[in-house]
Image 1 (cartoon, one colour):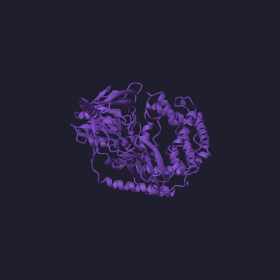
Image 2 (cartoon, rainbow, N blue to C red):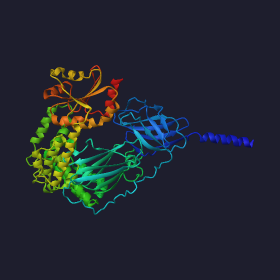
Image 3 (cartoon, rainbow, N blue to C red):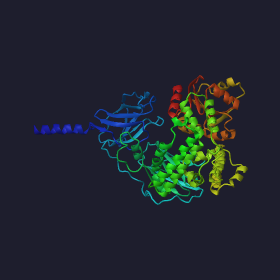
Image 4 (tube, one colour):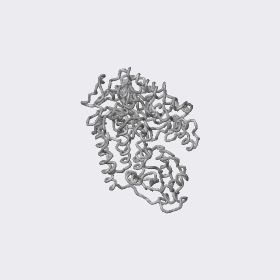
Length: 630
């Protein structure tokens, strides 16, 4: 009898050991997420299912979706396909309530015993699909954070000063690592320098590929110390670089994700969000403290947008000057290093001057908020009224501000490009100096950005600029010449003639060349930044739909310089049409093209099935195209 009891007990223990633990993990910690839209609030493990309670937050009145191709993958590589949704139907729009928050469950098969963590992922065919990595099942601690071998973070030096304040051309090198990088995570990091002439640079070279260990490297042409935004999986961090120096940065994905988490943002940090070693180390590590000083000052003295229209332009400027004076006080009293204080003063000054220089635009924005249905002519008239009301010396800055604007440290700030862009329209009452020189550089650089190589006149004008500016523009001109030469060998695009047809038949004539196919018609312009960014974002989509019999038609007009257009379209695969001013105006009026980009999705029979003014995003565009290819 005793032996039988022992046998039965052993059999029961064996059966229990072969089934998963029936347990609940509340608010599990996780390594990283590529979005704040969904988060796991609870994991329930049973011998028949694995259930994830999902907390969702998104814009009220908009929908989210969970793909039926979603999976869990455990630390042993075992994959578990999604089985069902509770409170949400897979592959169907889930409309967010007015609160912008919702909860539902998604169900998977039972996990194999011993799983330490799981990764959640929508299928690879889902553009920018949701991913959550390292959802921990064995306690509330993440694995030890490991910095790259040989990396040593620079310490904050409270006596640090900014390097010599002269312009110097050179290549800044960035070496970086995405900590906790795993296969299946986004394989590119965006490196976007602040161009002192045009602002944040997001060109086709912004994306840098990650190696298998999560490391990356790139070089940038700079004329001095420069601010750079490094972005990965919707997480951004700010660093600074310097000519001929190396900046090393470790992106702590787990900490960046924790800071955005609903359940863990108040928990103990997982180390620093960014580890840095290189030039301006103290400024990089103290950078976030600048906004913590300046934002309260802004909130205290700035005129709320709802009050701007009832505020005189004189009082508007006085409020900006009050911000500047208060900012100087809080920066001076802070315990920031001298280098960070100097930068913070430049940041405060350029923000204030930028706001003053954009006074008309700020009043028009307030007018738009108060009168969203007003006609465009009303906005223009209101803006002109504000400009006419400005005293002749309205834009004149103080000697202290002028000194900052003419120093290389100002070039490092976010608002400086806006000021440079207004130099030809606004009299700041300043002597000739670096700011006006930067305005000349901007003019020449803008031509290069429009695929126009340097002319002899521009080369002559360049000789009046600082040597670093000459070297920078020369390097960009050489890059452009190489690009133009490479464009001659590219394929995948075709220039079409619109033909001599009446305007009322023009659109039908254009799309009839591709009868029987689904057509995406893109009204765009070479000078339109959102157009160019959208074209870049749609490249992977076009590749994934290459067997779907879709034609991409690009239409632009004479506001796009023809030479610029000809040299830009080799990187935009599709059918291109360049219209006269009259043709462009007619089509814009006929189809309600109030701005670019505007998109029309046309079915095989030639009927317009979808329209979007502005880029709706890759997922929406792909969805509308696939509707018509079935």
